[in-house]
Amino acid sequence: MNQPLAERLRPKTLEDYLSQHHLIGKNGALRQQITQGIIPSMIFWGPPGVGKTTLANIIASESGRPFFTLSAISSGVKDVREVIEKAKKSDGLFTTKSPILFIDEIHRFSKSQQDSLLGAVEKGWVTLIGATTENPSFEVISALLSRCQVYILKPFSKQDLNDLLERAIREDKVIAAKKVKLKETEALLRLSGGDARKLLNIFELLVTSEDINVEITNELVLSKVQQNTVLYDKTGEQHYDIISAFIKSIRGSDPNAAIYWLARMIEGGEDVKFIARRLLILASEDIGNANPTALVIANNAFQAVNTIGYPEARIILSQCVTYLATSAKSNASYMAINEAQRLVKKTGNLSVPLAIRNAPTKLMKDLGYGKEYKYAHNHEGNFVAAEFLPDEIKNTTLYQPGNNQRENAQREFLRKRWKTKYGY
Image 1 (cartoon, rainbow, N blue to C red):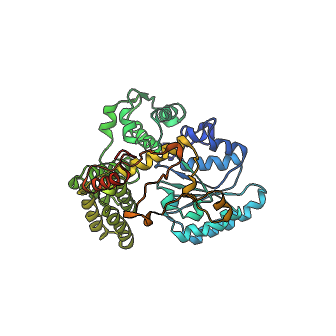
Image 2 (tube, one colour; image 1 turned 90 degrees about the horizontal axis):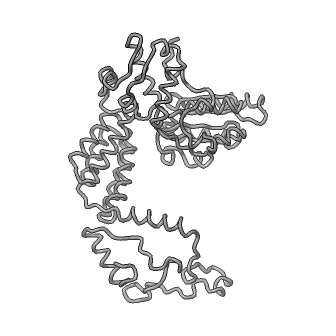
């Protein structure tokens, strides 16, 4: 009776599940696995309110498997082992279907807690489904990650959210009794930020605070909902908006704005590792060879804040942020790898030129591997003009140094050696 609307409307089957069409649509990879009964261990990665827990429940239901659940916030190694023991006992009732163990916020598990799952996953005692809002490449240990499929869940689309509101009006008895009319939904959708649970919570608040014949308008939404109830919502839309503003301020060489957004995240309780990791990426993506020391500073900051934590970590973060914001900028390395990857996808697996192939055996030497290779250190200036790219793409320029003191020196270095070969 007292269940919130989001819980009352929680889908029970794949047919009722409104979003993640790329995974569970007609030709979605996950739908095919579910219908075939082949359920691997998996990690659901996506922002809050996109249906990670719901999808895990549906998978268990539609595959006819026992379902166990843990929250990484309140569970320890002892809890994990107890659940695994229960799962092993229940497995006897389902000869070919291992029970599903769902762990919400798995990124909050320590290394030892994640290690405790390895044996059960490896031996098939449980099929693990983990849910995380953080990049699993950083937050899930490699041994566990290698045993799981990673599926990215996306925020609800505008159409999905509108469909959800229509379903609430049509199917929920409490909402239907209010005779609700959706005249305008822009404010509702904007405040939800693609989070279905947040949308339904706001919608229920609006409807239940009004008498019968409720007309939903932007004005009603904005007048009833407190938009600034928290300084920083680290699990919602502001999480993404503020980190975006933070990164763009540093990229735009504005240390004052960058420090402001840093303070917003610190005061809101943002994970120190998340902030430091983004600074590490930015140091290479947006500064790169314009100032190679930026990557050293960012890496040292990452190590330091992980060692000492808050509150002292704020000082280290501030030093790193102001250094990066006032550094020369270049995205040349970032653009170079993007262009190189596009070229690889376009041209496929081109052969390595014989001259620069490894020749560890006599047969390889007889076949000409490494025969024409010229050892740079045997030549004046430790350089000799040679071809290192496959013939099909020789003379292709992928790296263009930026226009700053350090990279101008790089360009001059390349120009003197390669003349006009690469157009420097």
